[in-house]
Length: 308
Image (cartoon, rainbow, N blue to C red; front, side):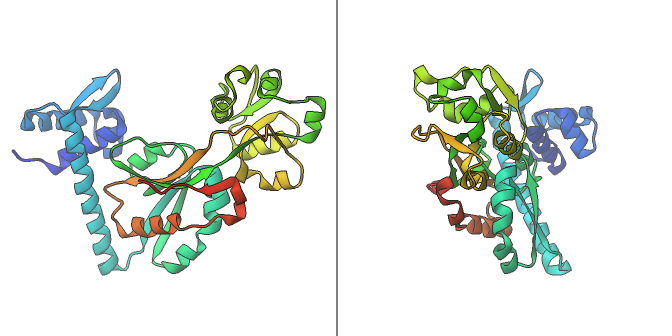
């Protein structure tokens, strides 16, 4: 039995994409060529590698095993290419760091100068987005600092920081709309990243069962900074990460509601492909991030356990 590298690359991209059409576009092939390549692999091995759940491609146990092998092998080949190019051609190494918009722009951008100064041969690019799972799996980013979990067996997780939240509103808003308990929010405008109010999970699930609000007036704002400004202008009540609004809290533009209610916290982690974690550039950036201090944010961001 021989395994053709080109066909293995097709399987790898199809597994990442979840369908043949997207994989074909990325590989500059036709969907039928992708299907044919995987069929030939399955025929040569004598076992099924993929199955379909509706329109979504899923890997069989054998397909998952082969995919993990592909990740390791092609990852090693990519690393070898980078090392040879760096030695022979003097080419700078590039690493792409993904992060959520607020954490990336408020924290990471302010912290990475010493890292770049220590490693001038390493060029760092940034990818700030609230959706980092697919870019990480497609190797569009090398590491992601994210507070959403990435439950993929190919992805390694290192705990970094915990993120505290607060429910806030403008003082003049509260003079008109007194709020004493979470249930008081039911008839008030609440600001949320989504129209369904899923953004408020950290508060709703922390409230006692009899005091959990059913929001009736959700105002969708698709950016954290937009929610901060909207709350400060009296457009509604907001649930926000504390570190993003320290200035507004210090100046009294926003007031914290329910200070004795222990809201759920999110946890920022470093996510990276296991096949890439051993690369020099990944190791250097991981070491810097895990040692990074954020004392200026007080208790808004705290060190999380570093268990893998």
